[in-house]
Image (cartoon, rainbow, N blue to C red; front, side, top):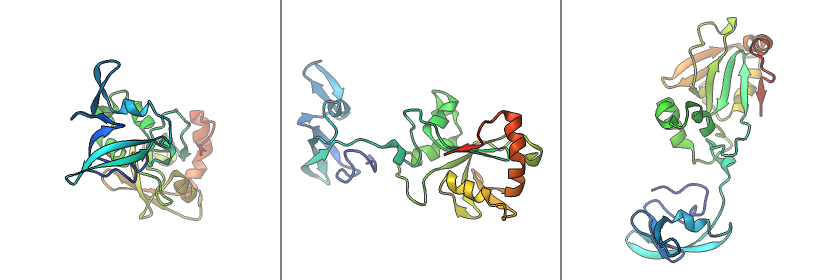
Length: 231
């Protein structure tokens, strides 16, 4: 159905390929093979666990009506290369607090804040973004999907506390590529106004870097924040 940009099938398997066997073990329509030890059908994924990274193993497929055999190199997946990381090892994720506005990159860990049933409880547009970008590889221009998580109350952001869990698609009309890029823009106090475009709805948010920075100390003290950002 889909071939990730990482993993053993990348560069060799194509969308639409039908896998008939892996390592000589014939697969049924559900991707299972008959295991002689347990005498029960098991998922073909179990075959991978019986090999080492960089091992080569054959897969028999049907492509465009023709039967053929490919040799795949078993390779690992680097989660840090994904545009929306799974963060499986609970690594510390970057964040930025500026003038009470809390910005973080979208990740599966963030979505799990809605609990084990996050796919049904988290905002639909965040789930859509996660499903769309979770297996895409980062590029120089697109390294993260940045989210305005919430707004910590301060007189300078009065009336904006209702903004939360919104994706920042553009800054000053240009697609936003990373949290570091946003920080650099909001650090520039020579700009009177910075326009963020929030999704869903293309909601415009006009911010003054100078005003935001002037509120940082009070926000940090009021909410007991030790650091206003981390890489």
